[in-house]
Amino acid sequence: MTRTAVLVCATDPILRGGIVLALRGRPEIQLVDDANAEPARTVALAVGDRFDERVMALLRRMRARGYRRIVLLAGAIDDNEVLAAVQSGVCSVARRSQIDADALVRLINSAQAGEGSMPPDLLGRLLDRVGRLQTKVLEPRGLKMSGISARETDVLRLIAQGLSTREIAKKLCYSERTVKSLLHDVTVRFELRNRSHAVAFAVREGLI
Image 1 (cartoon, rainbow, N blue to C red):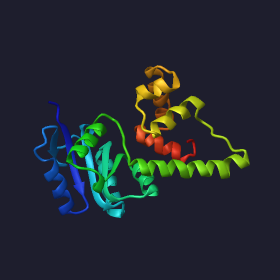
Image 2: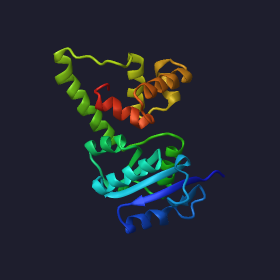
Image 3: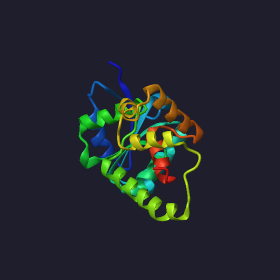
Image 4: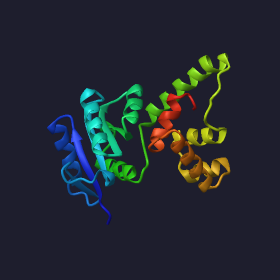
């Protein structure tokens, strides 16, 4: 069995101890510390009560050390904080009250595979807010999206709805290779890190 290396960092020792206890002994997980971790192959798990300056400091330190698969586990997080977290390098976000040990392991393994995740209610409210902004502010002024094609926009919108590559290909009548190529083009063009970052970028820029 391939084990996923996980570095757990938290804003206080009690939070860290609880997560370490939940993951210790899981056959899929190999807990590591910062001294012996390989950042390119390790999922970094940041844990905090809120998305505050202490969590931001954890994320900055992780990015500076070279970690690119970062999962944020927070007690509470709002719409604006989700975007800030993704901009700080986070690929997945979860609330501690909504996740158990099994779900946390699945989230970690998904991050290791390059996939992203965030609470559906947060993503839904973000998309709704951006949709109102586009309808009430951009369209009346004749403003249009630029730098991204209609096909790329369709793919990002469906990614934001949680569809897999196969589901997107079926819905749009594309091949899976075409879907992957479109997403790759967007991530390279705008220097995005992963699917979650691409969705956050699209939301922030009013593309979806």
